[in-house]
Amino acid sequence: MMKPIRTFGAAVVALAAPALLAAPAAADARGSVAKVETRLGDDTKLTLAIGSAGYDSHRRDDGYRRGDGYRGGDYRRDLNQWGQSDWEVRELTRDAVQSCRQAVRQEARYLGYREIDFDDDRRVRQVGPRGFVVTFDEVEFEGRHREREARVTCEIRRGGVVSVEGLPRPHKGPPPRRGW
Image 1 (tube, rainbow, N blue to C red):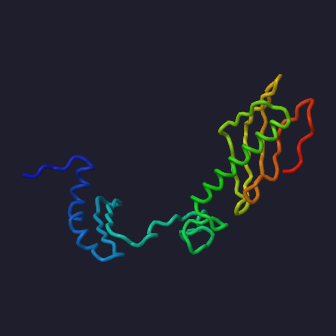
Image 2 (image 1 turned 90 degrees about the vertical axis):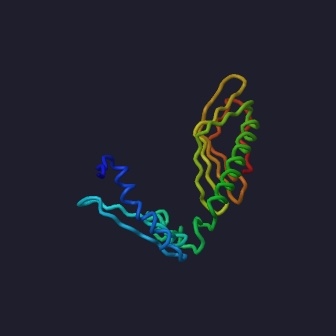
Image 3 (image 1 turned 180 degrees about the vertical axis):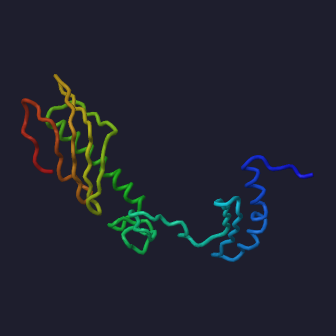
């Protein structure tokens, strides 16, 4: 006498067992997919596909990659509009944030602040192949008498800082340095 199957998981395994045994034999050729479908109910179907349909069988279908698996229509995969991979963008972003922090520290020390603390809240926007706009939401400037917090924005072009905006001016001190 056969016992009835009482759990959904056991039913799925029981129905999928023939597909698991037959599918590898059918998927020998490169680029072929073995697909077995089993009906579980009136509106329910279990589909098991084993094999490979190529390197881009699972493409994103949203506006970010325009539905064709490529960004910007470039022939290489995963490139932004300036032809950079995600890894290159990450490296350039890290370098831009470091150079911006260095420029803010340098300008703040020139204005008379002794210690500069950066919080983790920052936004980085790429505006060119090597151009970025970095915004630090909270930068704490500590002087001899008081502390100030400000939002500071840097613009980086060709890997170098071209402008620093948002530095708090002390009551007395030298005028802001020109040369960015």
